[in-house]
Length: 502
Image 1 (spheres, rainbow, N blue to C red):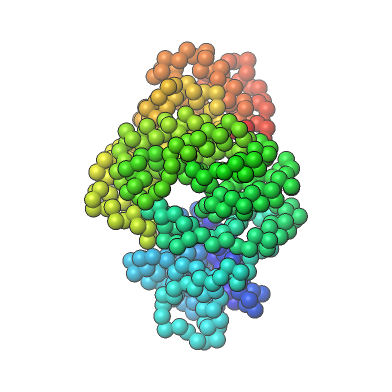
Image 2 (image 1 turned 45 degrees about the vertical axis):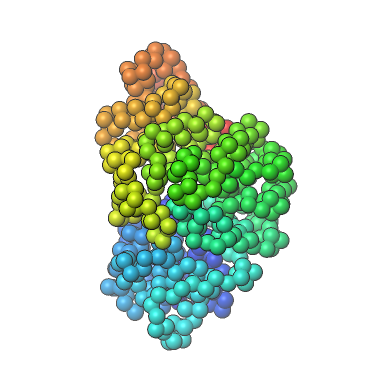
């Protein structure tokens, strides 16, 4: 039994909730009676509530994010019906702004906005001592970082063996990109680097090899970035995988020297280009030297073994579909391993809302609050881009079509893949649940009928890709002698799709 349960719903099992572990680590004398309970999207709300109530908690704290707000709202509604004596506290970025407009905030007993490391434990002490606060909405106190207990010892053996371990060397961001909640930060605050690296060393010694940094600006402070890279270089083995988000136009020589020493497949950078369009950049307060960003991406691709994942956002104010397409082509020419095509979202509290009227921004009223239309991209074209993004994830980013992808893209990647995307949706009427064998056959059909690629050439490349992916099956265009052959699995770093890009 636990007096306090901390709960969230993760997008996937492999995502371990760093926020809940921070709360648990800072519970002080209450930590022994606090339990973390994590679920995964797709579970039934009633079943999740049953699991929580089996702990007979006095307090239930929920971490609420854009991807789980609907499920947790249902959970809270059920809990208040069947166990109204349990005090429900919600916190997290999704409920830190526009509190009065959200059903989940109405249902909950208390809402903690912003940082919860100090405010949530204090609230729990008051509730357990029957000193109930008069205010329902509590603004989270932002303590000094050295007053926050680090949570990494709370990753258990199952987490270390099977899940991504999220870590942070700093919080906040000095930049003001208006689509991001970090635009509301005043600056970035670093944790004590010695203490942080000691925690990472303890995790490594316990067997941890998959580290994902959540810092918005890992390469902001060069000395700290180099020291962290050197930490991992000293422990480099064939299982290590480290992921960072980096500023695209800031890559000094000291960082390059360290990056160049990592083995293939051990290092991944998520690079937020978002847009190359100067008008859109100015409107969203994004300061970016496009020339330097382009040069840095080219250096990373040509002079390092790092996996490069780059973000682009469609639907920004001031950018139409033609400009976005040119940006996609410009980025594709630099050869990143993955291009993440995202659709602009109006996250609660972000300054991007100020452009709604001037640029006729029309947003989905429900999560994920994606933009549906702008003055430059109508609803029908925004739908096409959304399908493009989904199909690109399946074909372009998956690493399963490395040989055949050039057939699809030719010398006009955005135009050709949009043509494929439109054709694929016309053929299937869906963007999800397309079986891998079926997808290979559809790519074969499109390249041979719509692009006039000789069937022998298309089959040769696709069968090679199919074998390299480790798939097993019978494809309609597979030569009769190979249809029953067991294909060898792809080689790489275990279960990560990034291995397919090596």
